[in-house]
Length: 160
Image (cartoon, rainbow, N blue to C red; front, top):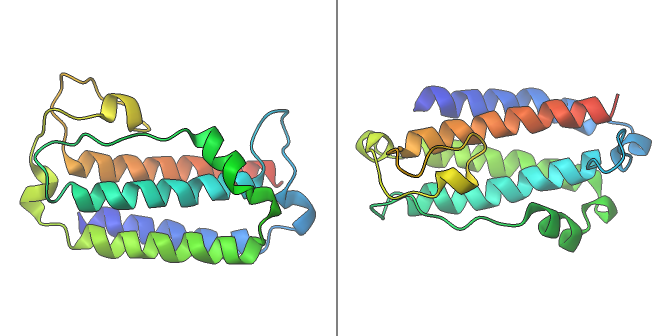
């Protein structure tokens, strides 16, 4: 699992400087009607880190992988990310993800690889898994990485 943690760390380190350098006038704008702005996408990634943090920790003490989801649009609206200062948001996102790297590196291998049922990854995962198919915590961690990468591509696309 350390290779996934390393990959998350690399993604965060390489994206941080690019995020810091996004011009202010591009942070609140969305290029396509109805799409999140760069600030809202970054806010969503902070929310994702927060939700997955508790999942990665809780999964070490429970037998299943059943976790609540969250309404992403409501979270974005409630936190008013477009009104928040950009550089502190970038730093929060960076540090939160580096903490997740630490958490992931310290999850016991048997805990990561144990197939589990029931789970809620048919509802909460970025790449969902059938509710009838056993799933591992490793899958959830890799899914987090894929979700992170996908939204960073989206974020950089809306700021071009």
